[in-house]
Image (cartoon, rainbow, N blue to C red; front, top):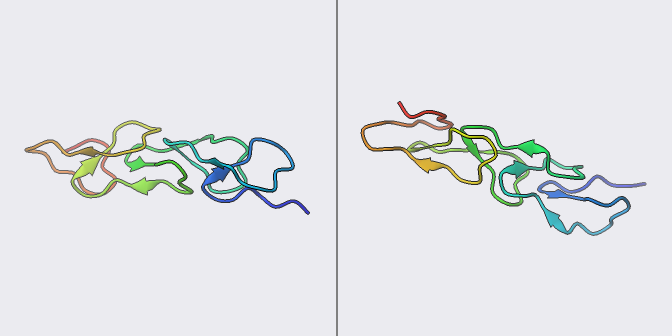
Length: 87
């Protein structure tokens, strides 16, 4: 029986038995993906090969979807974990 594609990877061709494609930066691949279609949500970052979005930590934010990194909170603002817009 066939196995699902591994977490953090995608398998673009049917019948693959070796995983070769790491999930693209800005997306996450929870497993069983044939293409990376799950865009990273705002407030999170998704580096290459992520199986789940990673929360932006306190002191950083991300106001756009599909991003691989978080942005440092500007001076005179504060940002808690998963901040979308600095306060």
